[in-house]
Length: 264
Ligand code: DGL
Image 1 (tube, rainbow, N blue to C red):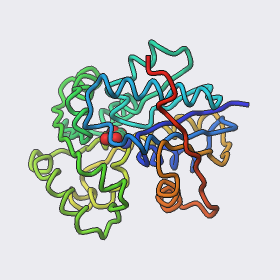
Image 2: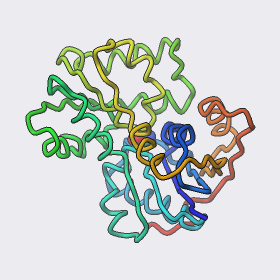
Image 3: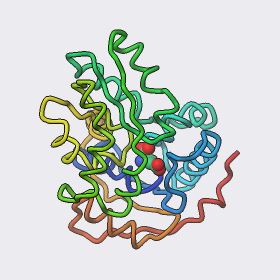
Image 4: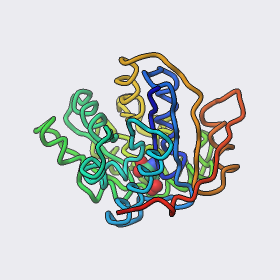
């Protein structure tokens, strides 16, 4: 029995789960934790993000996780090294796969990265891309408003507020002439259609969930029904998850007291 644990600050990690569920993997059980009581992570300090992420990992360990995917760009950018050093099970983040896909995709060497303020501030993407594509220019843009918009269900392609917000954040990247854009926050694939429309067909969007799922599907094709846990408002999470995962069965989620898990 092999269990995969996945965590994010909220619904964003569902973009990763959706891709894994669509392709299948070697896991018999998938446990997803959304920290809905403490979202967003992206506006917080590195210290807080590390503390929250350690608690998230401890919770998933308590549910039997053998491996963990940090399905959160912010936690991957700020806490992955700490988590790897603190825990002995395999832990994978979303940064490496995205940086590798972007380096392989770009033709003109102009790569945009959008993420939370904490992800952009960490400088993790320019650092990784310096090794993978030394001549590439990397342009970062924090898009903090997209996280609450996604959490409140304002991500439909016809949502005028979402459209204007995407245009506001992407204007400069478009002017720079990027041909590749890393969706560096797992909430952002929810806006892929709007972003694609604004930037045009010449710009390749890199979705870390899809990249990760491609790799995991090499190991097997099992598609277990995921178990969901959240730290607040299970009903609200379930409503979003059902729409988002396109599930034909009702999604249920259990409430967990994440503060009860040690952060040290
Ligand atoms: N989905 C997350 C990320 O990838 C977190 C967004 C947030 O909590 O601010 O960055």
